Image (cartoon, rainbow, N blue to C red; front, side):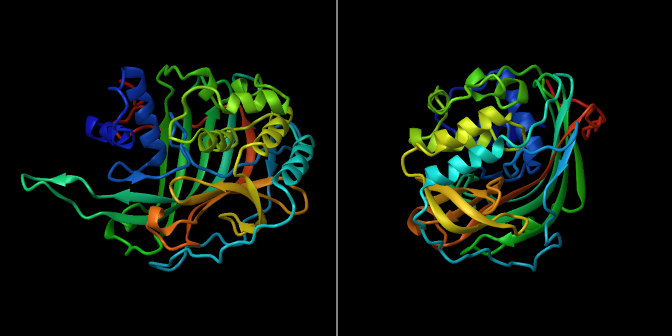
Length: 361
């Protein structure tokens, strides 16, 4: 990773003060996880780590659980746009759905040791945004581009956040961002990448940590968890939007213990603007019930729950305001599915391009 790539992170929040060395190290890890230094990929914000996946944590036996298999694991056609019919709001309240999800959370548990790793397999689709930068002495902006990049990911993250992790990314065929032509660079990433995820000794504010050891110490009651969601500066201009995003961050590519997960679902039901949609589909094609809210970016974010078991399957983002999102209403612009969660004793020792297992420095 070079300093030009680190500058991409600064472009996301230009009003932020200059990065300290620890923050730069975190940015490097984020760029590795995004695995795309030439463009900025949009995500449901995770402040110090651009890692993406669905949201579910279940377990069988001592170390592993596998969810329903994806019915569609192949690639899609070139320039295919992801547009869906706008869902209907249903009479069932968000609190009712989330209360059932809270009860479902108590049925499963993993108990990793601090020296072990949480291994998560997932399938994702997110937007990649490029261009728009000032070019040369003319002061003109380069052409803006958008497309939806798709991956299958396997990530190993330290249970207590102190050990280096690892990530494999299998690149799937991209899709056109609805309303935008698909650019040539959308097809540059192919095959499978194996990447180290060094910790670099980075210090993260306690209220932003999402490792298992931190999550198990969070409140196990809804009021306490709600207070946690609104703690600190989580970015953005909407505290309610930031709270909903924080909830997703605590479920995505990590494992949250049942008591805290149940409290989180109940707390999400108290966030203003959260409601229920009749049908939603995750990145693996599994249909469920959506619980979410519309953000200031013109995109509605949903957590997707199995309609029978109320286990959390994944997440998705749908455009609800074309003037803000610059894409037709009903466009699917983000989709994830978490396929399995396991506990591993070790993470693969993948090497970086320079032949080392660390990108710190």
